[in-house]
Image (tube, rainbow, N blue to C red; front, side, top):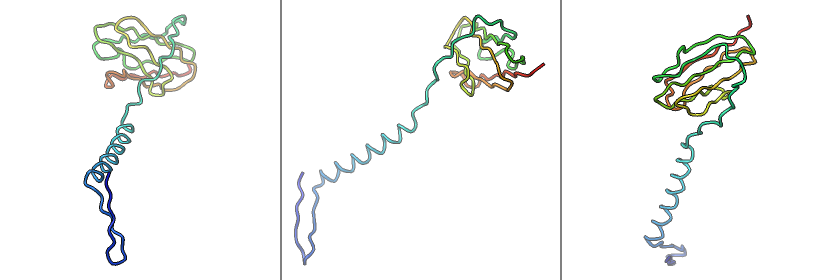
Length: 139
């Protein structure tokens, strides 16, 4: 790196070499790009919540052909929903509030017991247009 100083009329002027100027500019741009890309990184899928396989399901939703059938179910508190995956595509079930999250499955099932009243929207994280809702209401 080369930097030279000259004095002109009591003012010290510094001349920076072109290489040093370009090197500094590249460093600033690189740091800015890294910060920008870090902010764009996806949050990622949350960890799966274990299936409640030992609980009797009161409603069954079939996961097939990029849709949930039926897309809406209604159950009472303490009841469970079982999602049955029927290939050929890989899907999962992820609650909007992350209270239940299945593994990615082509075939098999995932069961979740609902203890609180409320509306629980969910989707497939691979195909976010696949949406459903579980409504938990007291009888």
